[in-house]
Amino acid sequence: MQVELANGVRYVVLLGTLDGDVLCRVGSYEWAQLSHNDDMVHDCPTLTINKVYGHTYPYQFISVDMSETYLLWERKEVVELTMDEIAKKFGVPVGNLKIRKQ
Figure 1 (cartoon, rainbow, N blue to C red):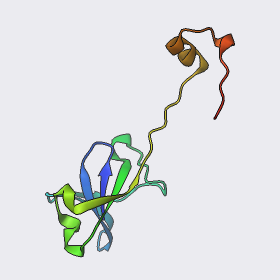
Figure 2: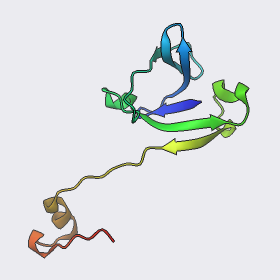
Figure 3: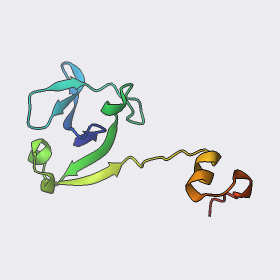
C-alpha cells in the first residue's frame, strides 16, 4: 500500500524488512523508519500519515501514477475554535451564541 504524508509526499509501506518496518518514497530510493503511533500520527507533524491508498494489482504498489490507486482512508481535518473566534466570525457577542451539535 501507499501512504501520503501531511507534507504531500507518497511512500510505499514495507513491513518486516531487515531494517524493520519502513517507508520507501515513491519514485525514489529514499526510505525512513515507520515510527508512527497507532493512529498514524508522527512526532513531526509533516510526517503524519493523512491518506492510505490501495492497489488493484500487486505490482502497482510502486506506481507513481495515482490513477492506479484508490483511496482507502483519509484523515479528516479537525477545526478547533474558541467561543470568541466564533463570535468574531459571525459578528455577535459571545453571550448571544448558542452552540448545538445538530
